Length: 625
Ligand code: SFD
Ligand code: AMP
Image (cartoon, rainbow, N blue to C red):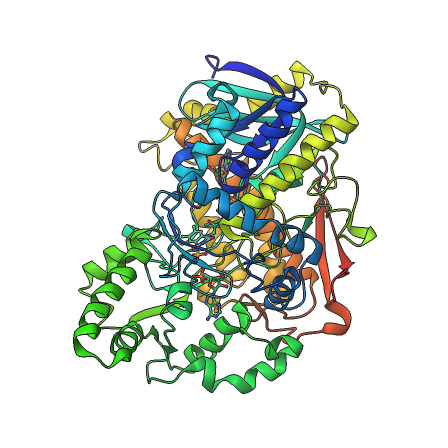
């Protein structure tokens, strides 16, 4: 530990993360920053070319409004998102992204992203809001634009960010460590933009043993955004709104292209189409049970009801969908050609995005044109960019936000000088890759506006405080080194807990007490309170984390971040006295939707010093009808 060098970097705007939101912020902030002599620096735990959720590529852009061709309006998108989240969404933030996202997609195309075109040269739509792409290299293309805008000297890759530096109640930057060299980093900044993604593996995954690590959302997004926001004393919102996606079983292949492009049906094991047969259930869920498309969580719930009744497993009827399209022309020769085309689209959908699904098809001799595939709800994830809504509470844009939702600079949190975008910003879901990049652009420009107008001084950071932070952050290495010899097997030692064991304990706890897969996503007040008791013990044991090397050190802090995400989630579910998203979680002791008392945001904040929590209701307001 003594051989750890401290590297101090001073900058004006610090962008944390190198994913879709960060790349958008880098391009926009560098452009406007250059006009005002403002320095922009970016830090990523991995290599930007292949980091974050889009590392493996994507096969669709899921947010494109199509304003130019008059197909849709901003308000259409606002309504779609508000209904999908059962009434709880920030219309002002959703609209702000919706009015700019098409421009971002056109930039992607200019940068070289292949977007499928129809015979008239128009974009091929997967659905009303989704475009098909050949997106294996999507992240490389977007990262290249960001790196060019920033300049190599302003990019720090392979540096893991642990938490914020505070200068009084102002965010003054961040601390972290290299995952390649013995370097501890102090980033001092006049403004900070947090885009560290969402959280995976807080709950026990369905994958285990040889498959452990297999997930839909990337396990390398470990809740660092939530931890950073809490430790800065900023407000979070919608931490109860986890996302439980329905996915092809065991390899986590997405379903959007099958439902929307291939118009595939999903049925139970007896051929029953649960989204049709269980329509009466939708009556129970207020106005949201009547909208089209059926909200994502209710789609899940209808399938879960069939499974609970022993009608599982559920299947995506790929064979039916492909053959129906192929034979639709009635011409046998054309059908053969179409079948071949559809078959390659089916495989490309996964080869461009979730390669393991294609591997599992191969490994199980599954030809989608001949055999349907099992689907099912996965373990919960925390992502503010898909059909979940967890993230920080940020200011809206002045022209769209109700007065209560605007405090100076759009996308700024409740802590001065700290901005969020992408998964890190909450209550504005359905932004996906293109919307997250767009929100990054908006937040990047807003942070530059903040720097130009407020002219904040470089924050004061006490070197002695930084040395204390360094000791705390590197402590797991010391704990392991000092105690590893006290047992015959360093993996079994009473003096420390190893990161993987810590993670498995957290996952078991969340699965059993906070409504994970084993509990069919169901929980109650007594279960949640017991879960909090066990989380408090886990937090005590976090002080005894041991790390055998710098990789383990990153794992130790990733799991600490997951633990705080877990606590924010459990406290928020406990606070909301109803069931609003039954296909995401079900409060068996509060089984109904309560529009009268609970059509609100649930916000939470933790005092960084005392770690005391406060939770509150925030009324849902909108300037949209
Ligand atoms: O259909 C630290 N997403 C899809 N979006 C689409 O537009 N189309 C699709 O087809 C999509 N599909 C999909 C999607 C995601 C995944 C994983 C799959 C399939 C398999 C969603 C988008 O990918 C998502 O909305 C955006 O990428 C979110 O952007 P952002 O910027 O909020 O998160 P990020 O890109 O993961 O970036 C996070 C960055 O932070 C870094 N990082 N760096 C330093 N220190 C730490 N402690 C850090 N922790 C994290 C990461 O390295 C990364 O650079 S479909 O299935 O939905
Ligand atoms: P997914 O593959 O589940 O990540 O979904 C990709 C996109 O398709 C998202 O915009 C979803 O909201 C949308 N989607 C998925 N399934 C359906 C469905 N059955 N009806 C309407 N939209 C859907």
